[in-house]
Image (cartoon, rainbow over all chains, first blue to last red; front, side):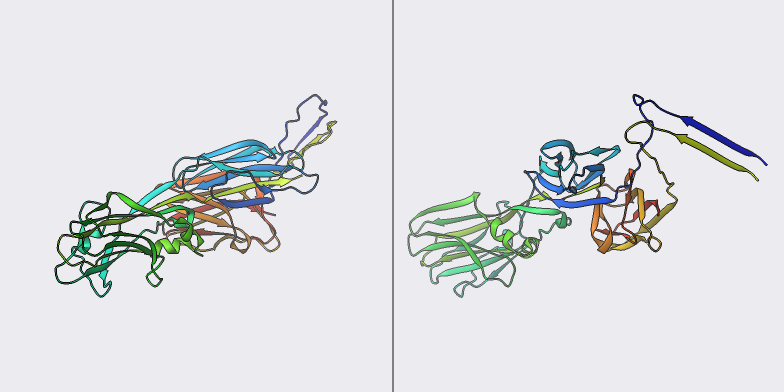
Length: 296
Length: 123
């Protein structure tokens, strides 16, 4: 027989700090995804007469962001992610106790906006008014680079053509990104050295290859002169229409642009030219936040 | 016979006595995947038991986002791994208590060699 028995009787005075840990388990998990959130949004409201005890917090963010947690109106923790697709977290060895009946809310600031510009990957010509007269169609592929496809007026026939450009723009991580802005940039030029008839450039886009073309702008010229947008492109913001779609990323994945050129006059010397149609997409991150804790 | 017994009686005259109840993390769940996972169960507790999660770690050969799910495969934590050969881990000072019979599962965003470790206990 070998018994070891220890007894310890100890009465601390009230002024003395009790050296004991609470390890109450955290039975409440709050998980949210949030984009740009400038105002405080309530994540967690405790039951009446209770306080929230936060035991740990974790965020993951696809782009740089500051996520700020608040106890009622008082902010108490700012978590920053500076590198793309990263995490930040805080485990409290002593739970953070919010004031009784106060809600825990979240807001964001310093949101990184990522902008990418894409050129077309394919360019094809289809008939416009029965004509397909653009030459060097493949020069419309890619970003603006000074290589042009052209539609020249001719001596015997009216000339015209429609270029259709397709893109490959869906980011791998699109599920974690929100679209902030979509801009189409048409790098084109209309030059008349002969004033006969009307020469036109018409700019279109559509959300997929079955949809009707949406006209954005028509530029007509019937007097000698130039409408030159080869350096400073004609820009059209289609953000609102893209965001109205049931799946905006589906639009980004399938959209096409189109450029129509036409000369109604007969005679040599007039030209419509296209360098590129670029699409600029600006995105913000869809952040995920988890809060662990309990109420008491 | 070899008995070790310890008796410790502490009497507080403080307003609110504080009690410690700590359990060891006697369960380790470890799995490695090389393909995209959708709601793959990692930890199924014994009948009527709750999972108490005390720590977790994820490592990956390639960038990936791992969502950790609870009941009905609803995510409760999202972990983004940016780099190749990267690790993310978190130890909870207060164990995360799940509802009885709640399963923890994971969903990954891309194919990569992903290893996940869950530490904790069941009660």
